Image (cartoon, rainbow, N blue to C red; front, side, top):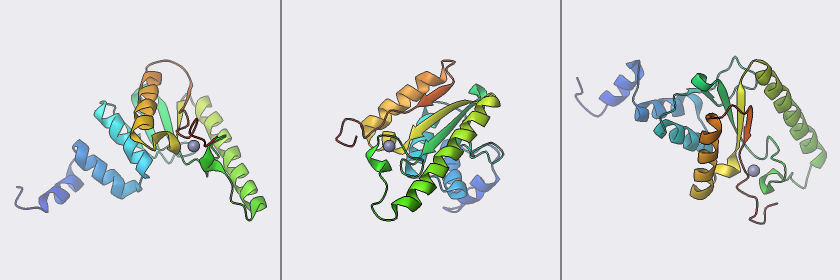
Length: 168
Ligand SMILES: [Zn+2]
């Protein structure tokens, strides 16, 4: 059945249970996940977590779901979601008013979405992009997230990768 190099692509389209590598490839095509998001997904995958992506019918369209734990995970860009105290969340010097309004609206929307998700019984993890930016902070973030998963605490927020590096 695998005649040539193209076979993989054909098979991955039709397979009900794609392998890790193929499902990563497919999800990349389907959802165009950001690099930090992909990094987190692959960490979850190698730790054996079953997850789903981008549930559009949930408030805020969470990036990753762990249905078994009733957990939603957001991988938040520090600028757009205004990571408080993070160097990446600084507004541009020009058009400050415009940016202030836009980012404030995002923050409000995030708050509403998280509150709704909580009401629906989901536990919520917010993983900031800066906390996945290098190998060291990625490892720390993933470890913290994984141990939170096994608690029954409602919320998780990753520690800033920019804290203590002159960014705050
Ligand atoms: Zn940040």
